[in-house]
Amino acid sequence: MKTLFILIFCIPILAIAQDDLLDEIDIEITKNQFATAAFKGLKIVNFESTKLVAKQEFTFIVSHRFGSIKNGFDSFFGLDDAVTRLNFVYGISDGFNIGVSRSSFQKIYEASTKYRLLRQQEKGFPFTVVGFNSVVVNTALDEANLPKLEFKHRLGYTAQLLISRKVNANFSFELAPTFFHDNYVQQNNQDNSQFALGLGARHKLTKRWSINADYGWHLNRAENSPFKNPLSIGFDLETGGHVFQMHFSNAQAMNTNGFLGQATGDWSDGNIYFGFNLSRVF
Image (spheres, rainbow, N blue to C red):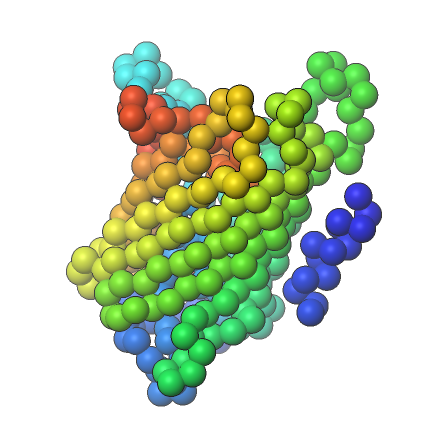
């Protein structure tokens, strides 16, 4: 346990905010030969993107995910079962971010780091590579139902490599090999350590609008697991000072361990969740 904790947090070791995000022009290569603006949001939909907050920049993200729209008016198309996540991200440098968040889904607290390892460059390395690590604490686990519960059982960890390429001014894609570990899992035959491959893309439609999508392919899910691979589709709208993301997903959880390990919806029968992310830069 201690070894895993140390390993997760050792990985990162190995300005004023602009008034309008549109100032981050969608061009392929900057004058220093690095690709920029592969993604405008810190997340594609569920998965982290390779975008980072700038040095000494503070970003506040409100994420809202309604309940399943399948229930119709019984839950007012999910309004009665909504969950919210508040996320605070600060740029220690242009290539290193820290974040803290709280989600009403399972009352989860999260601390995270995000750091750039390599950048896409003309006539150079063809991808941008970013690392992401987090620790989550599930405070909703009930000692009354789990009499042997200890604090360590509430913990979960994530380690990701985010590998993106800006193909041209309109299209970018990302691969996200992911390891995540939960000290407590709901399925008896589910491994605590789990692996997934994330796939995501962004296509610019107009100066302000883009369509985004991501998918998580779980690689060692238990055979009788009730959970699904998360598939999400959405739109980004850039306005003065922030990006507004609207999306549909078959996962209600918004932390990595949650949407990869506990997605319950099914697109084939309309059991999906509408949500949005609203970010503001300070």
